[in-house]
Length: 91
Image (cartoon, rainbow, N blue to C red; front, top):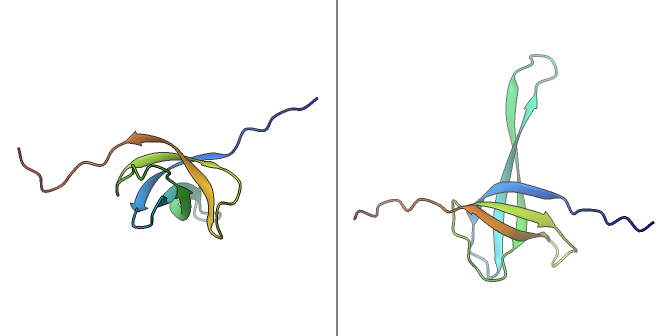
């Protein structure tokens, strides 16, 4: 009878990695306006635990809900989906 619930997971972009072992991920979603039926982008920021400090700003990552690790941090990094393209580097 014990059905294990899968934790919620989201995909977003890293907007900050200044804190030690913490990243800030912004997740965008599209919602339809109730009257005008136009799609609007809504975004929300989540603090996630990055144990190895591997993420850089601009990376696309998958985060997963977990137990509270601090006052604002209740998500953890699962995988880096795509890395950011370095700007200003010429080869």
